[in-house]
Length: 127
Image (cartoon, rainbow, N blue to C red):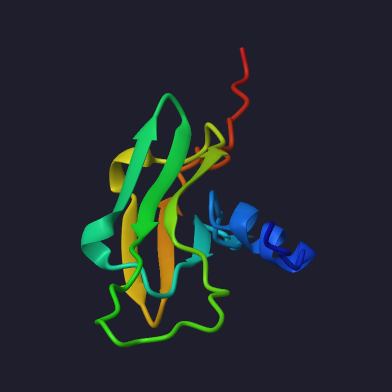
C-alpha cells in the first residue's frame, strides 16, 4: 500500500478550476452605464456579449496554454475555462446602441440611456 500525503489546498485548487467569474464594476454616468470586467488572458475571439429580454450576458473562455514536453509544472493558480456573467438592464437604456472595447485585459461595455423627455412648460390660456 502506498502512502499519499493529503494536501487540502490541492483540493481547493481543483475545485476552483471548474468555474470562474471575472470581477465586474458597474458605473452609472448621466447618459450611459459602464460595465467593466477583468478578463486578462481571454482573447477577443473567445468572448461574446449578448442582450436578450433586458439581460446583458458576458460569456467567454480562458484557454489553458499547452506546455511542451520536458516541463515540470510545480504550481498552477490561474483559473481556466468558461465563464458567464449576466446583468438585468434597466428599462431606461437603449440596447440597440451598446458598444464594447477590450484593452489591457479589461472588457468595457457601454450601454447608453434612452433620451428622456425634457420637461415642457404648458402655457395657461384664458377662456
